[in-house]
Image (cartoon, rainbow, N blue to C red; front, side, top):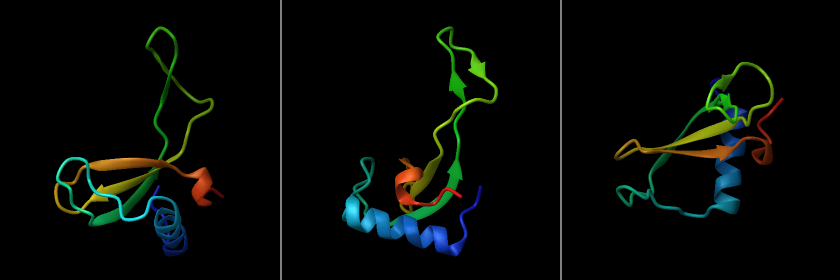
Length: 81
């Protein structure tokens, strides 16, 4: 789900306050863009994907140099409706 401008700003503020000027673990760049909010599927103990149920909404933070993607929990950032 794409984030609107207000939610994108909340993510930027959260990262500034809590992650500082963090570098990409792949290329060492500190130039990032905010991506979408995603919810990865859950898997059961047998390795099967569970449809529905609880999930952990995540926000993509994408390196602008090598395009490595980091994920951050959306709830503490205040971007869930």
